[in-house]
Image (tube, rainbow, N blue to C red; front, side, top):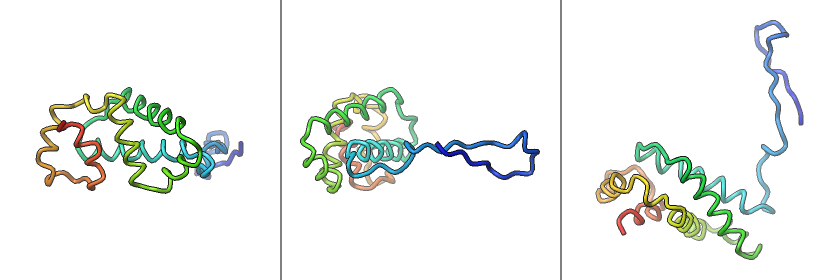
Length: 135
């Protein structure tokens, strides 16, 4: 780990030391599940934020674990193909969303919002999630 001292006007005994770990670095393509995990988390945050709903945190974490399980079950070559193909990513995201039970959380509210799709401020890719509420 590398430590850096943030400059500020406080005496040195009150300065904040920020630890920067190598684990915080960008994931490499050699770890496709980590890349997909972060992308999925970002999309889930956007999805719930745009619907103005608090995400069901335990179910979100379960969905992320489900995605990792789904991805790890695939050969490495297919994992790399998924990382490079947004359509394949959304297919995996939709499977994890459904298998984790996220489609059962806030079901009535989201189904109502999904029926008036034009009023939502979500790109069309998010229909992979919304359609699960209409089924």
